[in-house]
Length: 148
Image 1 (spheres, rainbow, N blue to C red):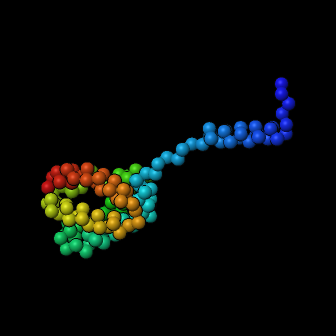
Image 2 (cartoon, helix red, strand yellow):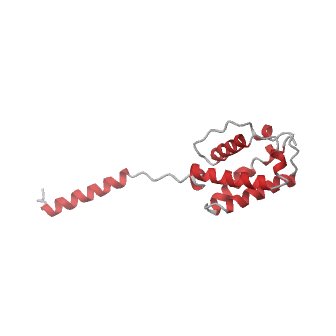
Image 3 (cartoon, rainbow, N blue to C red):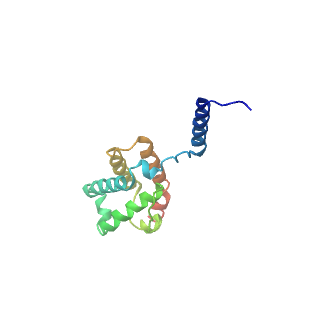
């Protein structure tokens, strides 16, 4: 056996400690879309801005004439949270049932999407996060338009 100097012993301990730290380090999971959108605060800001845009649009506001706005805002916030992999629970109706017989035309749908895009552009979120959310929402187009 070879004699180990104090310096060699300390170096070996430091090396072992450094290697054990590497072995135990877990990679951080990628942030969810919900996190990229700002979490609860971000969702609230998006929905609040969007609701004001809808209220200010004379063509779109008519679709909400008989709507409980507080319920709508809370449901929309939960829905966006869920589809962006957040910790919320959406308890509202499925998209086809929620929008049935509203008389929504393609132009109305596109106008609403434009309002949402304007909302998202005004938020401090990346283009990537914005596009991911829009892509997930676009997948609901057929359901929203199903019973029109």
